Image (cartoon, rainbow, N blue to C red):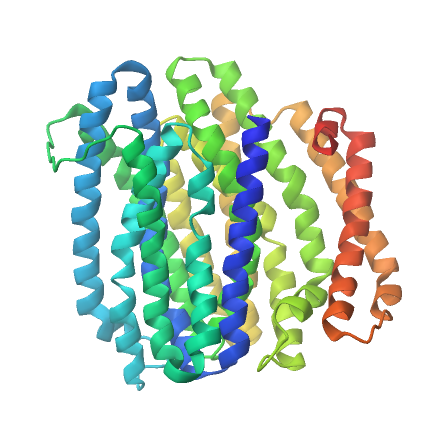
Length: 495
């Protein structure tokens, strides 16, 4: 499992970084305050609905049921997955139709309501939802069979297509062409996974049997998960709609993507590997083993996310200055973006914990609680934002994000502890050691900041890279040294 986690995490991180590079390329090319590129960024949220809805339901509901059937009755597993594929395809077609028809209404909610390109971009982007649906269906099947590497790599072609479009066709076709390039890139994700699914011996024929017991179970469990995901989507749409008033949709998207690169690249690979195992353990009634495995997952995630949160806060400007401050992206834009990144970075740990705890409940086939907590997070986020936007301006978005996700993850941990006593001395002591190591790392970075700021080379790119990576390397060395001294069981990360 350790080798699988390392390989999947490394591939996912590289894929996500390339995706972030593609975003930075078109942001630098068109400029962060270009109206059309901000509309493009807003419209990209529509296919992301499927990213969350289908992806989460498959991870939370389909994978545990399908994995359980694979260990008991392979024929029933084939019947079940055929029904699921049919249901997903029908649901996505309905969502595409709703998105296409409702595009003018959604456009009227934004500050870009007077731009015809808004409706145009929304309607083109909705067709990417179908490919997203297939992508996550195929990914769930592969994960259930223990195939993780290709699914982690699959976003690379999308990023390459987008980057290639900007360099070769950006001047000729502008943002209008970028909309189509993105849809084409997203379609490749499903097409690349299809051969791997076929090699598993699965032969799809349309099936729709609502009387099938596993299908009924999946539909019942999907309702609360849907509540949680819809809550998240309302949150996302609300935040992006609020950002249109400041013409900061692209910058907000870049900051959120930068933060999520870390979370998705670390938490999702870890939980994609752990979730089938947790589901099997819970299915056999091994409560103690389940608690130990979930605790290990939490510690593995926190081992990386706690220092990452400190690093985001301490090196906020250096990160943005290297990754984003090029082309039409000015130094003033970099300062603003860095301040947002520093605030969002404080929520890295809470959102990571929420992702882990959600999947812990999903493995227990309890999707109701994560659903209600997701609704609670949405309510706190929207309520706080509306109450403070006139005083905090656009800073209300990262602040409300940190507050709402922290409260939500705390609720999940408390309930899980009541069920299986997840908060052990081992967990508390190790987390305290992670915090001590991360704070020491942050203190050293603060003391040495002026030294790194004075580093200057003839090459601007090299100067910015050294100003970022030199303190990063120093911080990593300090933190891992502390981990080696303080946390005996985590010495394997240095091997």
